[in-house]
Image (cartoon, rainbow, N blue to C red; front, top):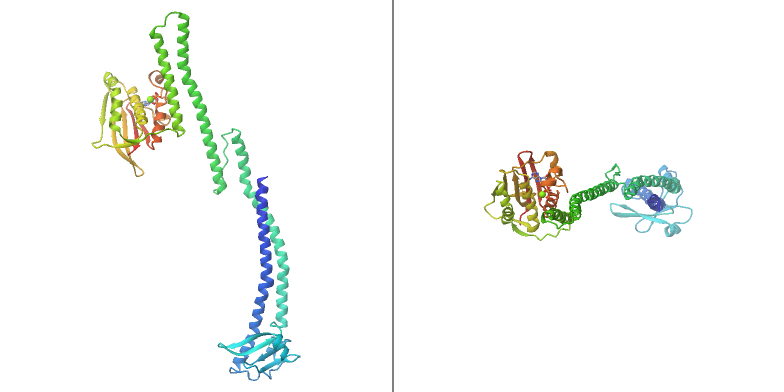
Length: 446
Ligand code: ATP
Ligand code: MG
C-alpha cells in the first residue's frame, strides 16, 4: 500500500472521529448542559425578586397580597406565569393564576426563599422563565442547535483539507528517502540525501547518509584490499615462477642457493596470509584475547634480546627507561608481543648504524582511566608529516620501492593499531624527517 494512503487514511480517520466526538460533545453541551444552566439562572432570578421584596419590607411579606399586577417590576418579572408564595407554616401569602393554588402547589416547580439561612417562604410556579426570558433562551438554544450541525460540517472540511496537507507534509521526506534507498540498494553508494529538519525524519536521513557512507568506505576498502593483496601476491609468485622456469630449462640438479630465494618468497607469502587473517579477525571484532595482568618489562626485554645481535652489529644503542615499581597492563601477552615486535623491528629497520632506540615505560591517564604507556623512539630517517595520517592503513609504506626490498608489506602497523584498540588502548606516532620517530602505545592498567 502507498505510504501516503497508509498515513493519510489513518490521519483523516482520526480527524473524523475527533469531529464526531466534538459534534456530540457540542450538541450535548448546548442542548443539555446549557438548558439546565438557563433553568438554574431563571430560577435564581425569580427567587431573588421575592428575596429583595422581603428585605425591602423590613424582613416581612407585608403588603405582598395587595401587590399591584400593574406594578412594572411584577409585570416584568412575573408576567403571565402562575405563581404562589406560601409561608413556612403553609399559608398562602400570594397567588396569581386562573385556577385555585392547589393544583399549582401539587404540579408546579418550587423553590425556597431563604434569607440569612432561614426559609421565609416557598415559591410555586408553572415555569421559571418569563416570556421574554423564554424567547431569549429559545433563540440562543435554536441558533446553537443549528450551529451544532454547521460547525461539524465546516470542521470536517477543514479537517479533511488539513489531513491531506499534513499527509503530504509527513510523507514528503519519505518520498525523498525512498528513491535514495533504492539507489543505495542498487549500488550507488555515493548518494546522500540533504538533511533539512532536526526531527525524526532528519535523524533517519542522517542515519541513512551515515549508512551509505559506511557502505561506501567498506566497499572502497574491499576494492583496495583486493587490489593490494593481488599486488602483494604478484611479486613473490613471479619470482617463484621465474626460478621454476630457470630450473626446468637447466634440467640439472637444483642447488640450494637457487631454492633459497624461492623459500624466502614462500615465507613472505605465508606471512602475508597470516597477517591478513589476523587483521580481518581484528577488524571484524572477532579477535580472541586471552588477557591477564602482564608486566611489560620482561615482555619488551625478550624482544630486545632477539634484536640485540643485529643492534650490536650495526652499533645501535638500545636505551631502556623502566619505572621503579611494576606496572601491570591488562593485556593478551602474545598479541602485545606482536605489536612491540613490529614497532621495534621497524625502529631497527629505519635507524641507521650508530643510532639509538629508546624504550620508556610510564603511567598515563585518559578520561579518569589509568594506562601503562610505552614509547619507542628512534633516531632514524623519520616520516614526513603528510604521510603520518596513512601510516596505520593496510599496505601503507612510506617509500614503496625502498620498503619492498628492505621492509615488509605494510601490514605491521595496521595490525598493531587493531590489536591495541581491541585492548581499548591507544597508539600514536610523532615523527620528524631526519630526526626520528616515536610511537606511543597506551594499554589499560591491570
Ligand atoms: P610489515 O610490518 O607488515 O612487515 P612494514 O614494516 O613495512 O611491513 P609497517 O610496520 O606497517 O609495515 O610500517 C609501515 C611503514 O611505515 C613502513 O613501511 C615504513 O615506511 C614506515 N615506518 C614504520 N615505522 C617507522 C620508523 N620507526 N621510522 C620510519 N619509518 C617507519
Ligand atoms: Mg613493520
